[in-house]
Each structure stands twice: as C-alpha cells, then as structure tokens.
Length: 448
Image 1 (cartoon, one colour):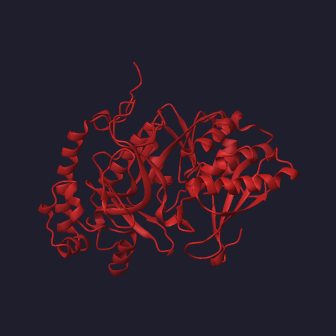
Image 2 (cartoon, rainbow, N blue to C red):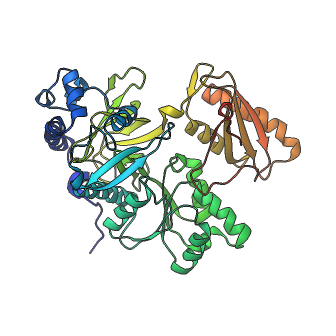
Image 3 (cartoon, rainbow, N blue to C red):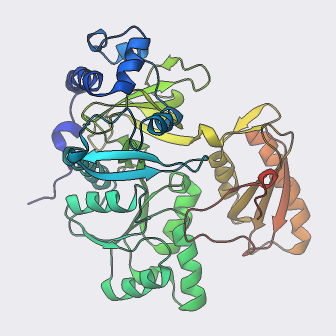
C-alpha cells in the first residue's frame, strides 16, 4: 500500500469555495461564543456598534477592531491572571503557555482539552507537509518550558506517529551522543543550531556532521531555512533535506505553516481553525489575499474555547506566494514571512528587514561565512547601518579592503541602504546553541 500523501486530505485539498463556507459557519459560531463568554470581546464589539450577527463573512471582519498583544497583556493585568478574553471556566483549562515580549511580561494562553487537540492536529498537518512520517525518529531541539514550541511541537510529532526524542536546548553533547546511538532521521530546531553542532562535532569529536545520518531538517524560529543559500549551506553540511517547516505563533497555534516538497512557499495549514487577513501595517487597511500581495498577517480563531483571538495582529510581514493549487495537490494559500514589523529597520528613509540582510550576506558566500551582527547605536531611523560580517576562509588579508567596498556597494545597489561594514576573520562571531542573535542595541547597553 502506498504512503498517504496528506495528513488531512479533505481539508488540505478542499476547494476554496467549500472551505470558505465551512470557515464562515465556524466564524459566526465563534463570535457568538466570545460575545457571550468574554467581557473583553463584548466590550470591543459593542464599542464598535456591533453584535455577532453583523459579521457573517470574512469581508465583514473588517468592521471589527483589531486585537493586539499589548491589549491582551492589559486585560490580564486588569483581570489577573488570564484576562477578560478567557472564555472557558478554569476547571476546563488543561494547560497554560506563556509568550514573552519586550516588556518582559508573559502573555498567558490557555488551552482546553479541545484546544490542545486542535493545536496538535494543525501541528501534525504541518509537520506531515514538511516531510515528517511515522517511520521517523525525531530529535526535537526546541525549548521545553512555559514557552510554546518544545512541548506543543513534540505532541504534534507524536500525533502523526513519529518517535520523538525530547532533546531541548542546551544539550548538545547529549544530542551528539544520542544521535550516535539512536541514528535519528529528523532534526527539528532553529536553522542556526546545526551550524553550532557542526563546529562542535568537528572540534570536539573529530566527526563530519553527515556521519550522524540525519535525512531531514525541519526548521523554524528564524528565517534562515527559507533563504536558498542558507538552505544549501545546511544541506551541504549535513547531507539532509532542509525545509522551512515550523511556522506559528504561540498565542495563535504553535505550528500552522510548512513547506512541501515543492518548496514554493509555506503552506497555510490552519484550514478550519484560522481565518487569515492581510493588512497594511501602517494604516490597518485590509488588502486582498492574492498572489504577490504583501502585508501584515492578521489571524482570527474560529474553533477555540479558552482564549480565542479575533483579528489578532501578528506583526509578521509576509508575501503571498500563491493562492492557486500547488503541484503537491494542496489548495490553500502559500506564503513567505519576510520579517517582524517590530524588527523592521529604517535606514535613511528605506525600510529593511534583517532577513533581507541575511539573504544578501548568504548570497555572497563563500566570500563571507554567512555570520553577521547588526549594530543599532540609537533608537529609530539611522543614516548609516553598522554591520559586522565574517569574511570567508579563502579571503586573504590583501582582499579584505576590496571585499568591504564590494559588500557596501551591494547593500546600496540591492537594498538601497548605506552601511558601514566591519569585516572579521572567520570564526570570530559566536555560533548559537539557542536562537541566533543578529541585532545588538548598543544604545540600550547590549554588547557584542
């Protein structure tokens, strides 16, 4: 018998018109539910002169105010500990996760058993899209803590039947020694982590990463796996296939986006659970979700019990790759996250995301190693952006000056930003066991 192609074939291949009918039916039920159960959402709707029956379609959602992370933190301060948007009685809540932010305050997200089940289901759908199968042994290297990622992603992998080894972060020696013994096939982690492990393998174990025998790398938490040169670096280094296959937001759904074998953008895998809108992040104006459109992703849950989200601003800026069916047979939209609006840099009137900087630097390998640091010396817009970049192993001392000029010119030509590049010998910048740090705010006392 041939292997099943989809985790949930009905939803993943459903015609868009039929899916819209299902989602709008659930949307009206979700709005009735939050209006009856949540002071927070009832106040928002009444403040906009709305009742649930006023919103029947996705287009009608535009009448509803946005919800922001700061608002949710505010309601949790006003109605501790879980806030006025908690819709389920606490005796029905089976798990609480927290997401952090610049304020250091947790935003708490509650799950009922039904919520936990749907989150594991969407995660399994995404991981299956990314290539994980029941026959795989998975080394899961995300943080097992109050944060979403470690536990939730682990349960999604178990849901699809894979054998999961909960490595967590900061356990690289255990990762290597267990890999030598168990011979896993899949690693799930940030794309910067395999670079860190590869150096440790070579320095401390005199091993080539390919000797561990991993077949697949499913990555998230950083933009690297969606950058062709970063993908090639990882695949050449480890001998596995690398996919951008772990997109999600802790307060929304842990994983609901992943590349398929076509690698033509991440598939939206939240069908039946989330409605997606696209907006101009500056004006809040709704933009049509169509091929080539760019904007901030806004999410509305349509099947949640404990902490539903209505028109939640993700701050993720994305490009819609296509709304046409993929060659893999999936019919949902495909997208690419370009960056966080919170991380957008302004350089002499031009906005640039760190991902674009990484793409440029990776694109001139092997003249660079791909490692870099962005230095922010003041708040807000800057005229010149300082960047520290490692030059490649083959670059001689005599070539450094010319390479510096070349890179600065390339930033000016390709991204229209003025940079002050400091070139450093290979191996100077740190490799990260946890999430890679690329931006250093020296005006706030951060050191590099």
